[in-house]
Figure 1 (cartoon, rainbow, N blue to C red):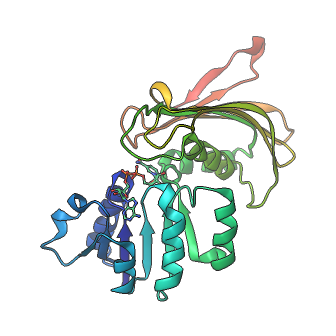
Figure 2 (cartoon, helix red, strand yellow):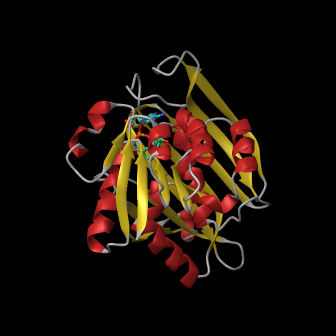
Length: 286
Ligand SMILES: NC(=O)c1ccc[n+]([C@@H]2O[C@H](COP(=O)([O-])OP(=O)(O)OC[C@H]3O[C@@H](n4cnc5c(N)ncnc54)[C@H](O)[C@@H]3O)[C@@H](O)[C@H]2O)c1
């Protein structure tokens, strides 16, 4: 039985809460023993339960030992929480951090210097989508590889009440999915071929928050990616497209992944045969 402490009880934390309690009930191999949120209201429902509640991370760490510590707070707090865990907690087996690991690049170096790589896992929720499992199996059966990819990944988030580090957080999802589907090994070099980015004061997090990115990337020697991400769109739009090549390197299929449509966590995979006479494409599966 693995004991779990959950830090951050907002949108992402609530999803973790549901998942942990479900697993606790169905498999019985985990147990949520403590939660923490600096916002008292988010803890009130747990006051009369066996789950210990804390408003300060340090109190949670000093007063208990946990096998798994989940960090689901806003990104700007991840760095200090990770440092505090190293300082006050020794027993943990694994730390699970919601993406992004930390806010700034120099913080990554600090975290790498105090943690062993295997101690921390970064969580990207879209990785759990069933359409990815389907796509990977189908690609393997048909001996297809990713040649190019593109994405449109954004939403309406003007003046949102939650702190944000900007659209860098948003863009991490499609890039992670492209790395996963393309089977890119960690550490593979990438190159930014070009792009534009825009800062604005449309956020509660400051006067200079990155709200839009358009980028062209080259990952490894072969895979070209172009993508757009923004907080200024009318509504949520989360698409990733893959252009798949056969064993001779010729693009024969296009796959369109559409996330959270028609409902949150309901995703669509459309497969098109391309390179047909007169440049036509044909939908073969959805
Ligand atoms: N909302 C989503 O669907 C979603 C999806 C994927 C990833 N994420 C990631 O999850 C993380 C949290 O996002 P969110 O949307 O849940 O934000 P949120 O604002 O809804 O929730 C964050 C919670 O953390 C608490 N908190 C912040 N700093 C704290 C601290 N130092 N100590 C204790 N509590 C603290 C806040 O009070 C709040 O309740 C981010 O890293 C985000 O990128 C969110």
